[in-house]
Image (tube, rainbow, N blue to C red):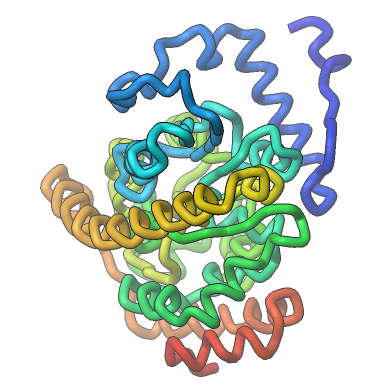
Length: 365
């Protein structure tokens, strides 16, 4: 480990000045490499999802990153996009998909995306506002908080297309959304009321909107990269986890945190982003096909995600996870307290646009 400190540095364009966060991500990657636990020394975790074709002849290669497991439908969509894109472009475009944080944490990869070092990523909705504040609209509490509301949001082309354009000034185009269920709390102790939650340490993503939400709710937070969560739970660094039940069950967080509070304040979403310079380098026919395939596969995946969430919830209950809803008065209190987040983010999202989304989804202050 000697001399690592002298080797930690940041290069290129740093998204919205988040130098410290980017350096941390680079440091973690270097430590993994030096200690011999990086992916380079392990079996390729994509082995089970290897393509049934030889991609070596592709004219265009899109290196695409995602943070979590392709056992989740909203993340597995990348492999379906890969196969369909290969077929529809007659082997011209290879969508080279890297799940499980193989290319680094989200903040690190987001920086790589703007520089063109990677050509695409499925960016979580909690991290996306770092590159385009308008993306934060889908993270506001109790706004896009159900599968039906998500369908309505995506179905309004004027509203959705404006949302997708949020990062164009940073050289990134967004194409579509897939998801991973409804957000709540996994915890090592039962949370029967909001008062029970107050002493706990909640892991949340390193995300600006989330920090605003939890500050409004008066809860203790520990912002943390996703790959660190399992160890943090086991070691008592955190007591609770802001995530979806589906993700917690599939990634075995429920093995430690055996209680679930279905807050349902937001939908877990992945925003499919492409480096604009790479996209512009494609011939027009391939540009059209890339967008069409991503949109078609994401639409199918949103339906699969509804079904998978219910399946994983039933599996979690069968394994002994206790589901405990909060009292109605606590839910109403959280909704009211969360309205300060709307006021804080309105100038960043755009007052007129935010109002249109609220009206579309029936949200009332």
